[in-house]
Image (tube, rainbow, N blue to C red; front, side):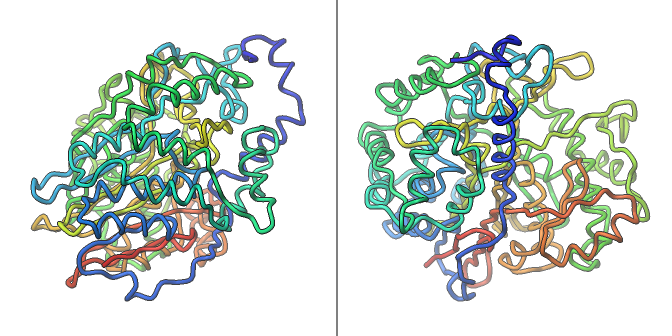
Length: 584
């Protein structure tokens, strides 16, 4: 293993060709692949159901979840079956080598809670983990390194939710995924495109052997007997089999063989991992109540802040996705992202002022900064409870996280579930162990450990969870009845994708499918991004005249949602992917 701690080590690996291929490949897989799909549009009657529904990124995953619901399973049972199939079919995006967040509304208890399965840094991790000679490590080198891999949390999170709510035996929930991984299926076209576009996969033996070799078969087929064996062991021996024994040992051995970076994850890091059950973060939005993921994710707070700022404006009277509405949405997003980047981190290490950030008076103060005729020249974090902005504070934006998958479930008893999971970048760290991709989630930490002379809220620390943008979200009406379940893939763009869909359904009264398909427009603090090839391109001159910096880029969201209607449920699946929404 090479450690990036000296000029000699740096010169031994950072050669122009390697950098060019890594950067080019990672840019190609950054979640901006062309928004094309092999999925045909679902007739509305096929995405409506009276009793139960699943919306996910592949039909085989949806069918696995429905199988469990037909047998009387809880939404959590269905979620485990869906997630394990996605771990096979959407391996670049999600899997047991990563983590996620499971938002669950228990109908009988009337409670909405979050299971936090975010990865953690090894206990030995230090704040300078991604520093080289006092400078931030290039992201293209950090991602495929031992330094980037966090202790996976997905299996522990699902196990904890199953202990609390599951009705079907744990081992039976893995059967659909095991069968598919053993038998194989035609490789999804989107996965073929991802493999073709990511030049970095050629550099690493694991990705060459698994992804590229299968994509080059005629016809391209997807099989993973190794993953099937791993899942069978977890199914039969229970979730602890992932964190100790042969699977854990194999994972650590793979990290020992990492080409460069830290090698400090231990068997104790794995056995000590715990998923956390947290209260959801909720806030009113007009006549609705919106609930989402609390820290360690920034998704819930940032979505709620954007909506809270937008409450000061009559969005419902504006043209959907018109220039005036887009201006207000992106200005609200800029303000919320400034607070996100300044305040939010793992609550076990950082005091996050959640209530003050979501206070109605504070958000009205933030809204008062917005001008209808001009974009803000600069955006600063606020000082909730004191002043609308701290004009002397400038916080650099962070735009990491690019992979991820989301699905939504409603069971026959009316329990609601939204689960977003991720390896971080598509293809994670470029390392595989026993058939699954190892995450690179630790690159979601801020590489510079200090901010304004004090530890950055998202600095690396041993046992700490890196800040996420994942935003599984639920909406309830004034009587507390469910209105909408939604979430997305897409890294820090997730927040904008979810906000777009919420506004379209709640303010513009759109069908959830139409809301999901609506062209994407957002601002993460780096300027407005408009989805290429859509009608939004026509708004670029108007937005630029207001002072916005505008980019037109491909944006592959992965929104999957379910809304309540008079006859039951209606689902929506992002046309940019290959998923569906089905129920009974």
